[in-house]
Image 1 (cartoon, helix red, strand yellow):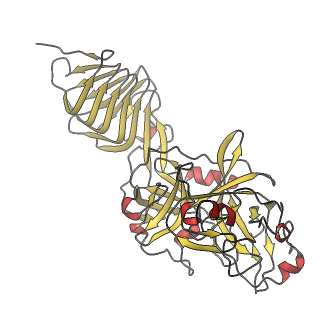
Image 2 (tube, rainbow, N blue to C red):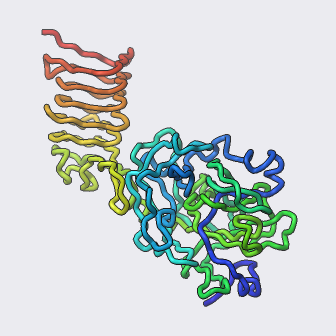
Image 3 (cartoon, rainbow, N blue to C red):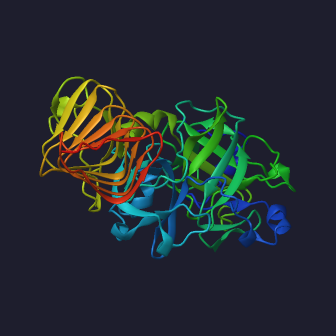
Length: 455
């Protein structure tokens, strides 16, 4: 069935001569930009969306992504493909910044891997609802809150917020300014349905029958030009512009601000030359149907040992049958990198009999034990936390920080940590008599115990 959406008239839809293109960066109402002295002075300078990142190469912004955890960004698949569907060159030097005003030189992390949804087609004039990709980060990001994805499809009338970097402008000018500033706009979700518009060309602009999230950029001075849904422009009404592709669409869900969509594509129904300006019809990918794929391709795996004794490198030792050992970070597309947070909270001993690298280790069970044997090294990229249980260290523990809030650290090995803090545990060097070496700063508090046996 060939149809129009919302308030788009059949006559207008039948005479459109422009084609769909990738979603651009944030464009805002003329009066809002004027109130701050121009679009260059309008940005998320208070850092309201610190988990929205600027995807960059040395040439600057090319898309926007959202941080789901310390290693994972979700964005759009089309960000990484050329018109002929080949992988965009130069991605091995791409990275991300979460600064509100960002530069490539100050990027927070480069990419370890990029995974595209296997059903994404990258076809002209198709707003593909499988337009999603996962970026695994070479360097974990832990200093900003992580975004949460909604499993619920929103309803029309929901107030939404779109956030992005890249080219920006006003409703009357469209996208023109490029400065790598994060910007915010709001809108009203007008339509939650498939889209199929006759553009006057050989093919329609379509979501291929899949449900999309659709809204337009209403002009506050000419509400009669509204193309679909509500005709009332919100105080921060805006649209996407060049560089926003892959950025999240946000809404309140069950009292929490959550991601409901990903910036997919747009088309201007009023003025072909005014990309992102008044009259822009914006399409976001609905994330609710994609949550399983996103979870399955998450770069960070949370795992725990099962009860009983066993070797670290025995897959049966772990709840998900995956041996926790971080991937190398050599860049690739299509071979997902994986990283691990490990928890030991069940009764039994886990024996490390070869070298392993993970992001984070937590000992949390009173009868849980980890044995690092001589000649072997456990590296935790982030930190090691002993809350309960026992770490018998006769090899090497390399970590940014080791904290004992409880439990026991013993053995004759080496702790190579920038900071070791004993706030409530017990450190008992040696295996009976012996030497435990701590390389780095050491803090012993009144609530921690240092048990030294003297021969």
